[in-house]
Length: 266
Image 1 (cartoon, helix red, strand yellow):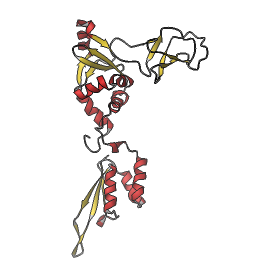
Image 2 (tube, helix red, strand yellow; image 1 turned 90 degrees about the horizontal axis):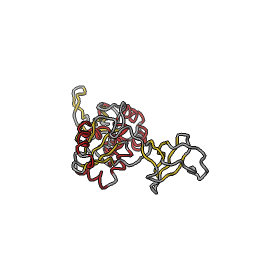
Image 3 (cartoon, helix red, strand yellow; image 1 turned 90 degrees about the vertical axis):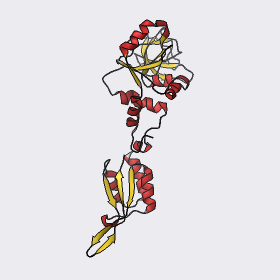
Image 4 (cartoon, one colour; image 1 turned 135 degrees about the vertical axis):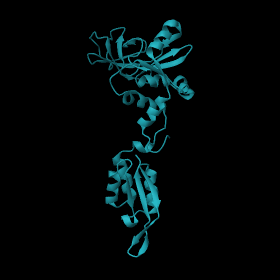
């Protein structure tokens, strides 16, 4: 984990920064020099636009298909390796791999930058652990060079690549660089707090805190939190809990002011 409070988006940004970046013009030039040494290896994936080589004779449910549509979109990849295609007329048919071609924007992705992993562990995942299919599922096109290895790019522009591609890829890769607490919803945390804190006003104060804000609980500041409660609060991951022992002046004497400083970290 990169640190407490690190979100999935933060972690994905950090991961992508480690990749090697290449202008697509350079990749195109390398391909033109060694045409036989390069190939696209992107497998079909859900959402791809396709052209069927033959007009289907029956639909997904075995009913006779009387239409003539040969274009559509992959709606589902079945466990047996076949594909459910939703034709443009909304009829669904089942076909085998090799019975259609994926319709691409061009021979190279639309976006003008391509990437290569910067870590051998990522390369191993790509080559040996079904990474090529998983990357395709996340919207990437993948290319293999006999000399330079694998490169990948994005067939799109004008939207948030992190939301659409990089964060899904981070999750498919199985990385755990983020703080799991950042994925807890406010409703979930509220339920967790109410299990061991019966003071509803304190629970409400905690839930209203913004990241970086703090409150003091106990002693001169009011409220009460047992040591066991403070430990449970800290384990949730949303809050930093620090015990503070100091004194305050009351009239002509000093009084202990033991309290907790609670900070919102997520």
